[in-house]
Image 1 (tube, one colour):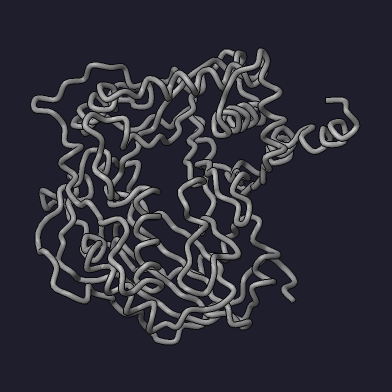
Image 2 (image 1 turned 90 degrees about the vertical axis):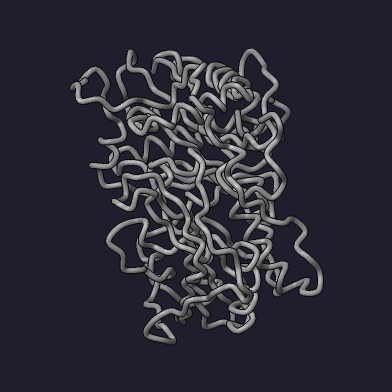
Length: 448
């Protein structure tokens, strides 16, 4: 059994990974990326970790990947700056069929041992994803895969998928298509990928008709009015935290909203997490804080974004309030703000945001914000390559950006994961779970 949370070393079967190319010829062109794709804020890879009880043969995984890349051929291409100069230029995808990186290895650990330490990521998990040597983000291939076979006959599958090419819905769509090729080889894909990003192209000329709280414009003027919470967080030793909220926990949270307000699980949990995060940081009561959270806008646009669109079809909704108003009231204040931010995302608002991003001096305002990304309810935890659904699904790493994650085997539960400064971990954990478990006894005794 493992004596600590550190994973043993991973032994690679080959010195270098292989490149998996599409199994048929694919279009060779440059794929335009929308302004939602091309945000500097999204210049990273979404890194998933899956634990499966039974391994799938490597040859089957490689062949099926080559087959699905014939449909999702941009993931076998390479990012390029449009102007040819560097990372600051607008990016496009050079659909050259160069291939996805595929590494295979072995780790002396069992599924059971991994599950014991899987409550939250640690730095040793990085061993589970091959590190591509690159000078910059755009040099990393859009898709990197590592399959690690385990002592017990299980496997860990890690994927790094470029966020400029796919959002969470898009990554789920791609991974399920990959699994479909293995489990239903004679059937066509249920959802065909829609490649063109021109459906989210800015207007000409750009027309910014709305206020966009979630963005700020960089200027040469020094502005010391705002405290940069993000800079503070990045300067501190960070510790991953993780909390699983069952349907009973979520019901108790909703009952804390007074006066009562009809709300979704996301709205209640986002308000609670934002409030707990702000309380733990002990900020000045007059300071203004923001919440940024991902919202799928595929069906909010007119016309709707076509089915199969796997690019970034989400925007960051934003709301803002004074610390005092957030922490001294109950969840009602935060929930109301979140609902208002969601309802404001009309077709006109989103089009205005896309046009705003034509100005490359505009960037996501994260200096005083908690950012929440929704991974739950995307079907990520249902992935099945023919040997059963995963025992565990989650991110490879933890960051200051908060993730709402699915819980394997419990569709109604949500896992909240975020890294916070070591000095506030205890306070944050206290505020997140304060009274939620104790209330269960009261409910059983008829007190609530």
